[in-house]
Image (cartoon, rainbow, N blue to C red; front, side, top):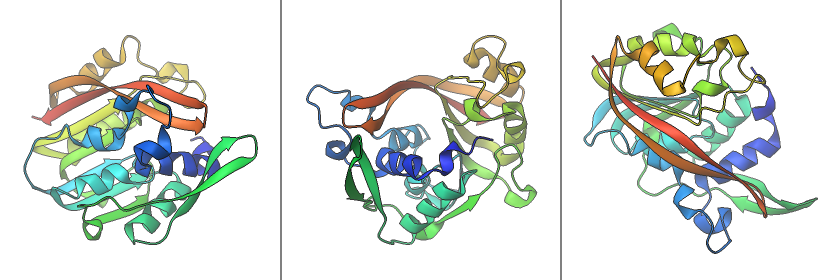
Length: 240
């Protein structure tokens, strides 16, 4: 898999994406403010109520994982990037986590992560892992969350085939993907042959029932004047 997410630049961008305030991310009047707080909004698609165990695969620097701790007794966050997990673990421990926000050229602003109010970091554990080869002793979960992961895996079907063992019968799965298939991450023969939505229904339909599909925009700030505005397709599935 690509090593791009090990760089300090991407760690900073994702800490800002996950934990930055609206003012820190988007200072332009009239900007796409509805695209902020994506890691919080995707978790909001789970049903209400408390559960015992939850899993966040492709957790990056951990905001969604922490959000899941509001209603789960145990949450595991897994990501392939050692740098992302190291940052997430520092946040979880309540350590001071500083990072640089690129403004332009060599100009940067130093920012600090603030722990979101109301989360329960003591219920959270982070670990490095490969979504295509998750450890066998993970057990099963009431909720599984995977945001913007599937179209970044070299062999996404290996991850999808594992999901029926990870989600308990009656449990919920939230998959979010911007459907941005790139040969940099996934060879063309492993792309969907049609639309990503149809492909997911084909791959998951035997063991999961599709319970909903919505579009959620997200915004990643690259510099003070350059942003990635993208729309992710969020699907909710219930394990049969």
